[in-house]
Image (tube, rainbow, N blue to C red):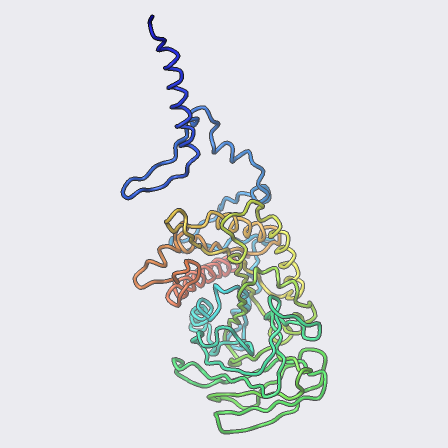
Length: 451
């Protein structure tokens, strides 16, 4: 009797299909030099995965519009995108730059750990002061997580209680514009000295910001030798104390009225020129700025009169896998920007997009996929709130630029593939300064062209 090979063939075919389908469920893996790639037996009959992705509802992509730039920009410069009315978002700042020879012009630079330690702000400040005058680091907090790391000023402190918008909070110690409030404890002190690299080695003007609800005194030591004391004005609102002494090489403050005194920081400057106040806060996504009382912002701006506010955030929001999108972040940050506009009505505002950031993806470091989604979300924030936007991601070089910064010789970024070092800070500070100054040239040219 002839054997039935047809039935055996079907059995063998079924076994082969089962084995192949089993392999399709396995991920890619390697054994020595051999790499097993993922098998997809149904690839030819499955729908195009790109089309499937396009059909998925993405809250961010629904919220973010595609922007096509129509204006030209000089090669080598990443131009500022102005979404303000009549494209004059930075006009207030540019007008103020004409007066740096007669009064100080201040910039408030808000950001996260990307700008802490004056890594980026310091070089930007140096560039602008070289062009427009001024000497000094501007605003300094009382305590800091990076006091030993910062090279633009020497800073030490002890016996303080620190409250902030991302840390400990107290209804009796509301955070100021910097996001911090400092309460002196018994034995408190804070000392500032010019950085050694500064040729002058002296502070010209020193200003102190505080609240003194009850009677309190300030004791301060100048140049390590001269001990002085001063009464501080009793007030529930923000006050300014300007040291009468000029050109000192060091200052150490001590406060009485423990627990009731609220100190917000000091400023080191000259009567003219330009100043960049570094308001960095590790872990802040930017949304925390909404916690600052509007009245405190107004009181602080009464003394500072900021002409430009820079906002750099996003790194603390971007995650490796985000299926919910950034529509919520757009809504919250538009609210933050609108409050800033209300509290600082004479200030120009420039939102700086997220930088590139790399992560380990299958053994290779590459740009995190959600970086571009965040960049586009931030552009949408600028559009909705009608302010200016600068694409830091593009200025760095786009995709995998952080990888290039880390692997540069010498390196321009840290091995965490997130933060710059001082070399990288100088590089990006120059690009930001170039973009701002190029926009100023175009603004002045348009003004002169008017009849």
